[in-house]
Image (cartoon, rainbow, N blue to C red; front, side, top):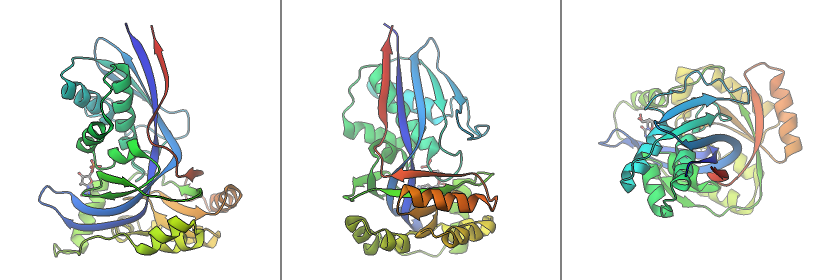
Length: 306
Ligand code: C5P
């Protein structure tokens, strides 16, 4: 029997991103709070004679930078899952991008998570959740969170995720940059700025957790932090002004998303997000969109057996 499975996975943002010293494996110790927001990539996997990957977009997201060979994370996810179970299966993968590419919103990780889940269903493997999360962690630091979704604390290099209790919904305006940014380059700049001297253990601000527990949008806006921001500003000086502009447009808080360059602006409602987005658009800083959070993690949305 051949078949097709379609899965989606959301973009992530970091409400705080505490970065520690570089570890012996080259990664940095992190203490972060992730939130999944309503921007999604969709991954379709179908039985095939050989594994292939195609990337397209229904929205305005440019996809030129996404690899279409074995290095694509959706292919790596399929291979990892097959290897884990000792099965020999090939899949045709189609990725539809809705998440900005190289925007600091874990678009690649979303593709990895959606591919893992879709292949698990296509091949009827029923991999236990904990095992899927471990495989996800092998693919990339943000992949486990793309499976989990919601709001969660991330530790280790970001791959260890624990759901965090929150109340209510938030609205985020996203200002994309016309040009993506390399995550390793931003981490390298972070290391250069700290001159190789040890940084303290990263921590999650208590004020942020309290704001989330109480659904206090004003307090959350003040508590948003990102240790990679100064490094990203050194590589792209215009980002600081973009964040200031969102605050001037009445956002409750402004922060860089992950390693950037996407900028995030916190709003109290959809109507507020529409207003902030419209204000930002008049400045022609880059594409502007908005989305609610938290939303669920990767999900199978369709399957079809032939
Ligand atoms: O895990 P992922 O593939 O997303 O990481 C991409 C790159 O980002 C790593 O190769 C590393 O340069 C940097 N990184 C890091 N510390 C982390 C996560 C990512 O230095 N905790």
